[in-house]
Image (cartoon, rainbow, N blue to C red; front, side, top):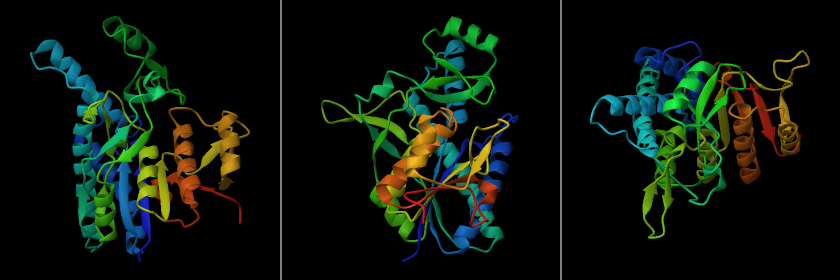
Length: 317
C-alpha cells in the first residue's frame, strides 16, 4: 500500500508579506508551493492537502461589511465566509497543482471538497477569540475601526506586522465526509479538504447542524484529518525552514528533532508565539500523540530535502 501524506499549506502558500493579494499573486504563490510537493507525488505518495484562509476570510468579511454599508446587500455570517474561501482557495490550489502535474507529465486527479467540521457548542474558546483573520492594520487604523465596530477584538501581531482582527477558534471534533476523503486519497486522487480549518458547525439541541461564528485552526484540523485517515506523515508548511527557540534573538537556536516532552516544555516556556508557531506546535503534538508518528514543520521549498525542517517525535531513536 502507498504511503499517505497530509500537508497543511500555510497562509504564505497563497499570500506573502508585502503583497496585495491579487488573483495573479495568489495563483503564482500556490504554483510555487505545489512545485515543492512534486517529489512526494513522484515517490508515489497519496496526498491530502489542508490549507489556511486567515487573510482571505478576513478580506471577505471586510468586503461584506463595506458592501452592507452602502447597499441593501446584507453581510453574510462568518461560517458562510469560510465556505466562500474554501471554494475560491480550493480552486486556486487545484488549478496550480494541475498545471504543475502537467509540466511533470504526472497523471493524477485533483479534487476539492467543501468540508464541514463539527465543534463543541460549549467550547470555552468561543469566549476568548484568538484566531487572527484579515489584513494587518496600524494602531491608528484599529482605533478608527473600533469606533464603528466596538465589538471587533484586535490583537497585535507577534512578528511586529501590525494589528489584526481575531475571532473564536474552537477545537475541531469531527470532519464530515472523512471516509470519502480517505477513499478518494487511497485511490490515488489528490484531495483538498478542511480549507481554512473547515466550515465550523455545531450540533444543536434539536440534533441539527448549524454554522457558527468562528474559524478553526487549519493545522489542528489537518492533524485530525491525518489521524482519521491513518496518514504516515504530516507536514505543516510555514514561512521559516525550521522551528526556533529564542526566535529572532541573539541566542536563536534552530531545532532539528524534538520530542513531545521537549516541545511541551518549550511551549510552556513561551518560546512559540500565539498566532504564529504555537498553534503549529499544538497541532504537531496532537498528531504525534494520537498516531505515534512524526510531524514535520518546515518551509515549502525545503520539502525536497529528506532531512528538512523540525521533526516532532515521540522519543529520540
